[in-house]
Every structure is written in structure tokens, then in C-alpha cells.
Image 1 (tube, rainbow, N blue to C red):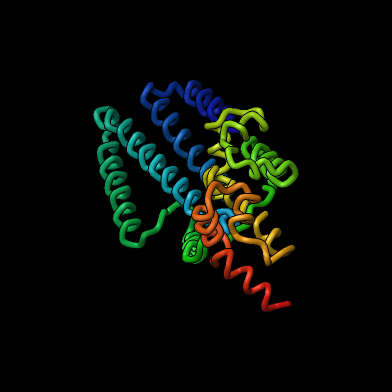
Image 2 (image 1 turned 90 degrees about the horizontal axis):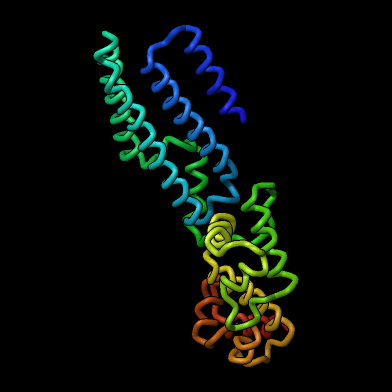
Length: 257
């Protein structure tokens, strides 16, 4: 709504000033670029808890590419202006040089020029470790995707559908009453995991509880009770999430007793 209001105000002002058509084009593209930039910064504001996973970082890079495209689009609109204004050719040349200078600096410093150096440092420090160290938890946001993801977390924690070895994305889609594509995107964005990785996270979490209750259980039994198809897939998922094997974890518990 704010963007619409600003756009309307600029249009009315240009109309009252009897501005030429190219002024409307320049004003419109500039406003679209600034609005997209603002939305991107707001969207990726929660850096410390959110960017520790590579999935979200890839989203930032994708958005950064969009910003570059918008900048070149803005310069493209300027191509029609030099014939109308004497200073426009110099402004276009300065804009092109500035944009390429920014790109050179970005490549040399491995900076996005989007989030700020301090935030990018936090991101890289967090990504040196495994993104799976972060637990799956409720998201403190009222966005549509956050509400959907919180429903997913509630379903997984309360109903435990992941204990079924044939549990799939379509099943979760029916439980959340949404389409699988949007559901998959919400899971990826808010957890840094795809659907299968999310399911394995909860299965491993359940397996840990079983082992803690009875460290004498056979790992094949724990795998089956936790919803895994095979012991091999169970061992791989357990190692990825807990950074140890199920057997080693069970032996460590026995040493404590």
C-alpha cells in the first residue's frame, strides 16, 4: 500500500509539472527498483538465526541477481533519454561505470553489497559448521509461509506422521490443506531443509528418545520404529543430524550409567 501511495504521488507530481513521457518511465523503474530492494532487505533481516543454512543463503543470491537485473533494466530505460537531455549521456555513462565498479568490488571482496559486511560475516561464520545443527522450531512471524511452517511443526510434533515409512510430501500437503509446491518452499525457507531432510530430522529425534529409554535396543528395531526404510538410511540420517552413529550414541549412554 505504501508503494502504491508513493507511486501515485510521484505520478500526480509529474503530471502537474507537465513532465515528458520519459520522466514517467524513469520514475516508474526507479521506484520499482527501490521498492524491490527494500522488500529484499526486510525479507532477509533475521540474519543470525536464519542464514545459518545454505538454502536461505542461496535465496539471497537469487534475490541479488534480481536486483542486478533491475539495475540494468533501469539503465536500459535511460538509453532513450540522451537524445532528449544534454546531460543524460553523461549520467548514463556514470551509472554504467558505477554499476560495473560495484560488480568488480563485489567479486573481489565476495560481498553481496546487499546485507552489509557485518551480517555477511555472521553468515559465513555460521555456515562453517553444519546447518543441521539448528533445531527445527516455530517461526516468530505472521507471514503466510511462516504460519504454514508452524502448522507443519505442530503436525510433526503432535501427530508424528513421519513414523509411517511411506509418509510423503503429498500426505503432509493434505494435512496442511495446501499445495505441495508452496509447502515445499515454506519448509526449505524456514528450516533450511527439504522435505525428506525434515522428515529424517524428526525420525532421528524420535530415535534418540527411543535409545535414551532403552540403549539395549537393536539399531534395526530403532530404525523400523522411527519410520526408516532401511538401517543404512537410518545410520546416514543419524550421522548427519547427530554427528555420530546410532551405535556410538547408544554406547555413550551406557558409559554414563
